[in-house]
Length: 279
Image 1 (cartoon, rainbow, N blue to C red):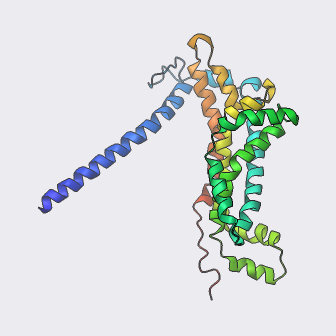
Image 2 (spheres, rainbow, N blue to C red):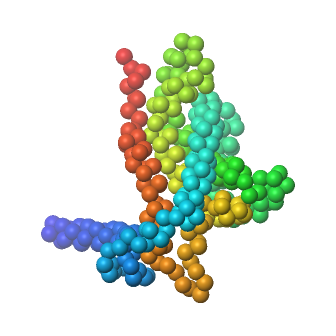
Image 3 (cartoon, one colour):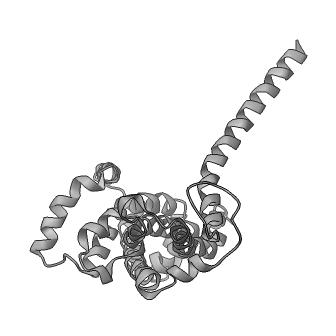
């Protein structure tokens, strides 16, 4: 009987491990193709060892009009949008976390509903509005829409992280004469560094990979970000420069990877503040 149960557990564990390996391979396969094809002079859709190692694909895409200008536009759009999102999310989450009101729950439910709205459903009225207020084909208009589209979920995340900071620490600061804004900036935000890091990375990544919004709101080619300019590698009649596309994808992914590396230390910090007000 015991051997039968042990064999069943072993079989289930092997089945689970196999499923996880298959899932991991499904996610890793496209990444492997990108890395191998970026240095392959004869790259195609197959995942194969390169026919020799070359950097010609990188040389072909490392041009101002192909890579540098679109990447700079992406950094301006996503960096500005992320900064605006984090600041507004912190200011909105603070009263939701620290002050009790009958409107808190309906407001949070409304925010949760706003996160489920498909972006394509609101682009037509947004486009018409931007035309009326002269924000179409402007970087600042696109930054504002980027921030507003990410703000609902950012507020939800920020509020949950802010709840983990003991309110007693702020009350001690208020006793010393600090204002609520000073306590937010000098006490709450530094102590919830991992939460700020999570919101920053999430917002930046979602904006960085967004194709539809800048494609709709920006008209001038010189203002297009890299998420839109990557479409230029898909030529007419199915002709695609796979090697250059893979090389551009590697370069395009670098800022996101660097951002994650920079904030990785903050992501694992946790909120070990339970005993901060004891004793």
